[in-house]
Structures are given as C-alpha cells and as structure tokens.
Image 1: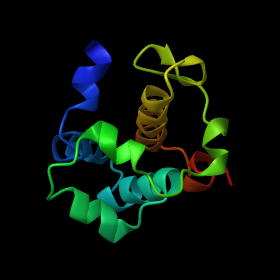
Image 2: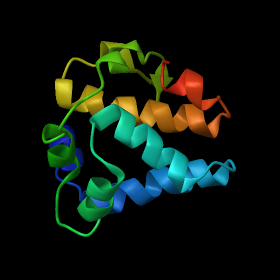
Image 3: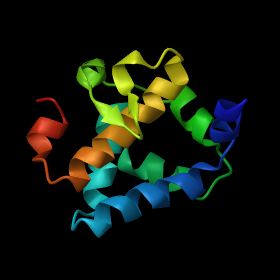
Image 4: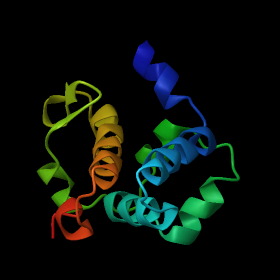
Length: 116
C-alpha cells in the first residue's frame, strides 16, 4: 500500500522536490528537466504543463510517451534500494528518475548520467 501512496501523490508536489535536491548541490532545474525528458520522452513543455495539472506521479510515468530504451542501464542504490532489482515496473521507473537526480547532485557529467 505504501507504493499506492507514492503513485497518488501530485506530480506538481514531487517534481519541485527533485529540483530542490539538485539545486542544493549547485545543479539547475534545467538539468533536472533534461534528465526527465530523456527518461520519459515528454517534451519540456509537456512537463511544464503537467506541473499545473492534477496528474499524479504514477500517471506521469504511466503516460510517459517514449521511455528511453537506455534507462535500463541505470543501476545503483537510491534511498537504500538497488534500482535494477525493483520488481514493480512503475516503482522502478520512479526510482530511475530519483537515481538520475542523485547522480546530478553528486556532480556527475551529463554524458554519464544520460548513458550516452
């Protein structure tokens, strides 16, 4: 049931927290936007529009237009959880974004974050 709580959170509440996490480490909201567009296939305008709607965090990922095929290369631990072993697909997609923002915050170059 804990996952349902996360899935039902408003995207407009979660996304600013990801930006704040990156900005604390001198990264920018533009960089968070870049990793989010890379991961999900949403355009920057679509993400900005989602922030003023009532879309849930779960639906944001469920409706992602073009999840990047290289997202499965995202590995490692975020919040004590190894992302590649998360069994539930939707939660794994969310953890991918968490991991990308963590990598931003740790100062990794964008080329490595985006698995280019």
